[in-house]
Structures are given as C-alpha cells and as structure tokens.
Length: 565
Image (cartoon, rainbow, N blue to C red; front, side, top):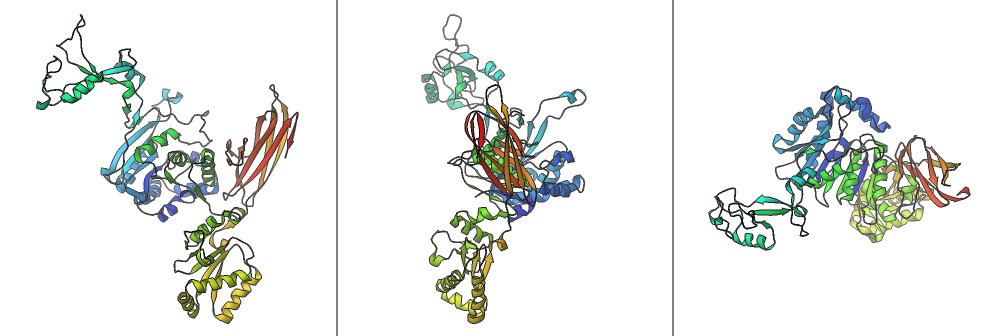
C-alpha cells in the first residue's frame, strides 16, 4: 500500500521490513541557514528542528547517520540511495556518513545539479550554483538504467551536418574501420581497399547496411568513386537515442515562480529531477522511499511513473500538502494510498467502508484480519494468540451482540474456548466504537456466573480519535471587472481545539473527481477569484494541527447578482 506517514522518520524507518525498498531519495534539511530551514512552521517540524540543531556539525552528522543506517538496512541488495545536499556539509556527509555506512566501494557518483544561474553576488565572489546528490548502491550488483538526453544544438549542427534530401533527414559520418586488428574482417569492399586493421563489420552486415542506404561512398570531383578514401557509416539523427547522461546536470531548471507544478514550498525540487533519478534506479512496480517528503515531489512523480512509494515527514502540513498533490493528479487508473496521522477523525472511521475498516482496525490492534469479506460465524479476524476477533463499526453495541459473539467463539474452536475458560483468560475480543450498558452488564455476568471472559475493546483504545475542525465560509461580491466577470472574495473560518494549520481551495470542484486543489497552502483563509455568469461549484478545506480536515462546498449562481447555497 502506498503510504504517507506523519512522524519522526527514525522511528518509522525502524518499524519497516529489511530489504524491502528499491530506491531511496532523501533531501534532508541542509546544514546551512538554520532559520530558513523551518519552512512549514508547525509543531512537529519545529521540534525536529530544535533536536537537530542542539549541537554543531558533529551533532547534525550523528542525527543524519542513524537514519542512513536504517535506510541501508531497508534497501534491497540491488537498491540505491540518492542523498541531496549543498556545499555546507556535502564533504562531511560523503566521508563520515555514506562511505562509513555503504562502503566506499559502493559509491556510484556525485551528481552535480546546476539549480540556478549566476546572479549579482557573482561580481563579488564565486557564486555557488549547484547542489550535490550523492549516489550509492547497497551492493556491487545494482539496478541501473542508462539515461539519454537530447543532443545539444551545437552537436547536432556540427556532427549531423549531411543530408541527401531524400526524406531521411540529417546524418553524421562514422568511421567503418576496425580500431583493433581483425584478421577475419580483411576484405575488399566494392573496389575500396581494406583498412590496415580490417573493417568494423562482417561482409553480411556490410551488405545489409549497403542495401539500406546507410553507407556513404566518397567521390572525386568528377563524381566517380574515390578509392583513396574509405566508405563511412551514415548515422541518422532520428535513429539515435541521444547523448548518454553523465553526472553534470545543467538541463533541469529549478522550480520557477510561474511553474505549473509550483505549490509554494520554498525548497521544492522540480519533478524533472526526481523523474530522472527514479528512472535511473528503479523500474515500474518497484518501491520508492522518501523519508523527508516535504512538498511531495518524490511521491507524486513515483506515483505517476507507476512505482509503489512511501513518504514520511514530521510536519502535518508536509503530509497534507503531499496528499492533496497526489489527489490532484489521480485518475481512474491511479493506485489508492493511505495517510497515517497521529489521530484519526471519528466521522471518517465511523462511516468508512465496513470491510476496509475491519481489516484496518484489526491490523492496528496487532491482530490478523480475514482475507475474505464473508467470514465464518461472523468473525473478522484473530489475535496473534489465535483468539477470534469481531468488529462492529457501531456505537452503543448492545447485549445481543455480546451473546452472539460468545456463541460464535465457542463454535469457532471448542477446545480453545474451553481452555481459555478454564484458565480465566479471554475467549475472544469484541471491537466497537462504544458499548452500551447492556453489553457491559452482560460481559460482567458472563465473567461472574459462567467464568467466561470477553474483552471489550473500543476503537479509541487502539487508535487515538479526535474531532475534525469546524468550518464556515462567507463571500463578498466585489463587483464587475471590465469583462463583466464578478470578483468574489471568499473568507473561510476554521475552528479547532488544537489550532488551524492552513486552508486549501478548489474553484472548479467536481464531486466524482474529488478535491483538486487550485490553492494548496492558504494560511489566512482568504481568496479572491473571478467568475463569469453561470453556475460554479467551489470547495474549501481546512486542516488542523493534527492533520484532520473538514470540507465545505458552495454553489454560486451568477446572473446579474450572486447567489450562494
């Protein structure tokens, strides 16, 4: 399951299975401007920030190294890690962290990415225009897909400068003589003498190339074959893959202010950068991990490239913005994903798909859920000790449910039931949102009169539950513009006991497609948008400090006046 997880990545990494990840890309906070590092400003990020900067470079490296150790454990033997950093600590990270954990022999390259062009400061000092991305594999047998980039215009015009005007396009000429002695390639070809070391190709291949018109035969001034020169191979531009990629990357721009992918995250990396890295070191179906998910670029690109993925961050805003970014690009063919927060919204759990909820809550309790929707005897799973579990996605579960569950437990395994009864241990576990007075009294009666223990487990005993924030929206008609469109001001007001993080807006809301944010990060809850006459559906989300959210949908009808419902 693709997942976004809120929390300290060290704790989460330790909980994951060894040898389960194909590719890890991490863009940890740089050891540079400490104030700039706090981007989202929420409690989780600030707490992590303070821990990381409680000491100098040694403390920073220790903080990073213990996470890299876990990442190394998680990688499959063919897996790779790409660590993005800047000049402030790149040398320390290479020598004191990556070489120590992965081994110098598994160093695969230092990608130098030119993210900006020289600016005014370059007149006073040597400008730093690049970041470094360290590339290590776990072992010497690693997955690598070569990447080809488009030839430069200068290369195309200097090499592919020939054209026969026969519709085949431009081509360059390559030597057809062998670079090494080839005794079995020593033959005359159509009157042209053999090169000193022989031809590069066998006669059968030469004939094929000749028949395909891919051999250039030199001619003298009279248009006759010039036997003092050798034939050459025609290499057509449109048949070439391009130039093999090296470690200097200057063709990917940083995210510009006008870029469509821009979400307002200060250190947002371009999708093209992550697309290249993911294509280099993984294939479709492989699993990609980003333990500092930030603005969600890695998981968004991995999802689009049909990889499985896992994103972790200690910031509520990072997780929720990444979630909305994924939602915006999802279609009918997209894979589902799960968002794990510190607390869960009661309404979302209470009214979710029954089977999905049963499976999820049993797993959260440490049990094993049934794989089929129709379970025997109405039982939904079992504990690690084999006790039957039943889940009721209900409140105030009554006495009859307890009686029926007791009978189901006995029929499920009579010997196990009798053994647990004799040992005065539970015969089964019943999970629900809450239990009524009758259910509680019946459990007490069974214990006292029949020596039969049934464990009642509330959902909030398993996972923390909170109330989602309240949300109201007002609007103001600011009048018409020169084109006759209405300028509408929207003012959202969210309320939550834990505080509001941000708002997000979808000005073209479509219920079947879901929420697709036009504005992902709005800290004050105020937006102005233009609308032409007609009907419009607008949706706004509010996200609180726990990551819980509420959605409000407005319908505008504009025909001279503005009406909202």
